[in-house]
Image 1: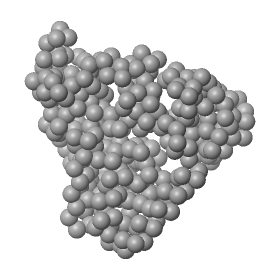
Image 2 (image 1 turned 135 degrees about the vertical axis):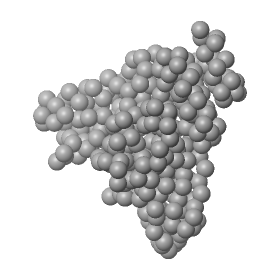
Image 3 (image 1 turned 45 degrees about the horizontal axis):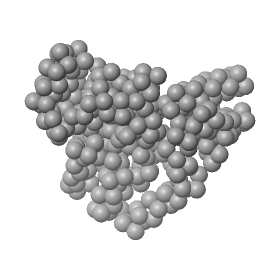
Image 4 (image 1 turned 45 degrees about the vertical axis):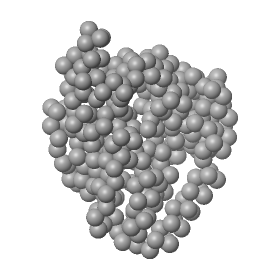
Length: 303
């Protein structure tokens, strides 16, 4: 069965695009996590669709990743297929004020392409360590901007295997959520609408936000960015700090001394270290302030 399944995958994407028992710590920004049974790197949207069809036919679990931000894979790994939509599907084309980006394109690269054409609006996203696909699913945001502010449309692969172009106003994009997330669609491509601007001012804004990130965020350590969603009426980082948890440690993971909203892997943490730390933080904040912290991080696989 396993050999037949592997051969089917090879027939779809080629053996050179499949890795077995691939350590997921190599593919997440937390730099933690055990092996995926199969790690598949499609070269086209058609291959993405075909791999998913094979998985469904063989009742094999599957999950799509970009560059692995906002993801923690258990130390026991993932029993199934990880489909990576990243560098092989990262094309960016610009026509006028319209930017078309494949789902695997990094936000930083899309922002750099926009800057070359003097297009403004992407500045807030350039420091977010994610891909266009993940950013659209989660309605990623920072420094007062969100993806919903610049998104025009998105091409998704639906559960029935059909591709569909969905306009931004139909995506019900809210705080770290969207229809895409709720229905489990796979993002293939997005179209952004940006505004004409002054290249010098755009570059200056990008540099300003980069400076703020360097000053305030622990970029020197592996992390998933902001670990918890912002509770209504509060800031997660301040709640964690006020609970006396700055520097709190479990194994190789700790609450950043620089910004309490970040859990960092500063001493070769295991996924269990990171998850236990997050659970401790949730419990202590709940007991202290009666506020429930909800992770931004997705947990996947066997812990």
